[in-house]
Length: 434
Image (cartoon, rainbow, N blue to C red):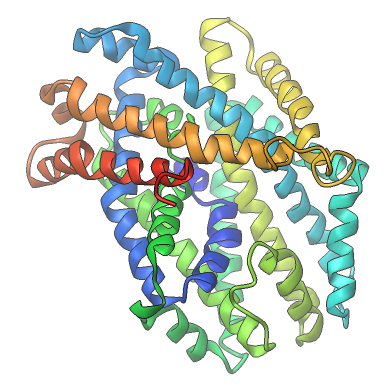
């Protein structure tokens, strides 16, 4: 459960959630986001873990087994394959951003932010992403750590790593919240997040909240289905999924409480966009008392979050290679990571030597992000909703979820609310909704 929670808790919670909340007015957006988590994210997360636990195999074979059990075409295994490939592609550009977070641990610890101007901070980040060798080295280090953990297996690798990193992440986050309480702007930050002003919302805000709720839970990347295959039958599926969803959401909210008071105390803009973490906050760390310590802790926490998610993106491909090709976890891990590393070079070069080379106006990094987030994951999630809600028998899903009101609510949501929500995300991605 900690591994699955670690998969959900990633850069999206600490890097993306605060800045999209800032861009969309604060409290009203938070309420909207929570509603999307409850109505779309949790039911779909349960569907994916359900498939994994009932199939007890890697995603492609789990889907094939359950399709045969339901009396339909085994070609449904393509949904599992899409999950494995998606995780592979996601990790190739995810590790580049994770590498930046790891580099910033040393920048913060070395005092690079102390008294620095905004131009200097911006230049520091620009020099990191603009140097292909530096970005490659930091991304490679993240991939090496991730591969080492995955190679060690479920008990010695995944479980041991997350039992250290997840509590460590939460502890550091709480320390940062404690520090934010001393800034004199904690109440301002709290009110910004939890005092809704619905006049600040628009149609775009709804789509952003819906999309982030879908993607923050690591749905349709293969990892949750793989972790589901490791979940014992005696463990309540409903309680597990609700716990994962609750912890994932809690981390995002606490991250906001840690970040926004610091932002307001330093007269910075909460809607600073993607640069909030790598440019805006380091500027604040450089000006505040104990900023070197606080900044270092913050980027250690961000690196932990990145690693737990990276593990879940690598695991599905390794799991399939060990099950179907008989490879050892060492060979499967090295082989998969080598492919991911080669693909990651395209994302690294997107910020420097390939910066001017674009496809439909997008860099290589942006193309991968757009294809996975805007097309592949929504369609894969839609397929899983249809499969568990309409293809699998009620006896099979009831056997995994349990009977009662909770099952009936989940079945209604997975059949109707989830497909509609995902279609809205997809239609927005292709421009039908503007």
